Image (tube, rainbow, N blue to C red; front, side, top):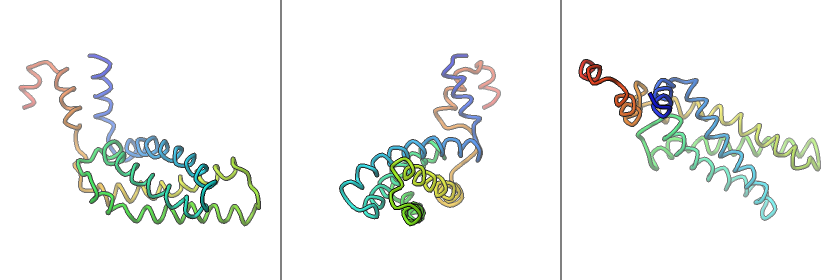
Length: 168
């Protein structure tokens, strides 16, 4: 068995909420880190409220596509998925804006590292709620049983021919 097929078999068995949550954190976390950097740049050009609105919408569209393809391995794509998850944009925006507002009420000039820590923590908190909404509402209808067609092809390629015939 090759390393690629072993990885495909491991991915095929990595189903369920824990595996999906790990994929969710990796995908969403990567986009959130990039978004936080973009937010720092944009707040130099416009008020935080406006910059956060733009960053929240763009990062949510990007992560929704990633979550459809990677996290939940859903065949569902397009604007229908984005419309179903639209409420998570508003919640994410409200949570991050409120966190930053509270920070600035408590500290007049908190510094970039403190701001980023608060912003990323708020994103993480909102992300946990987003995971639940995406899993239970947006991607609930997908078939959660068995490997993807690509994973199944890799697994089948490694099985002896008699095993495939018996399985069929």
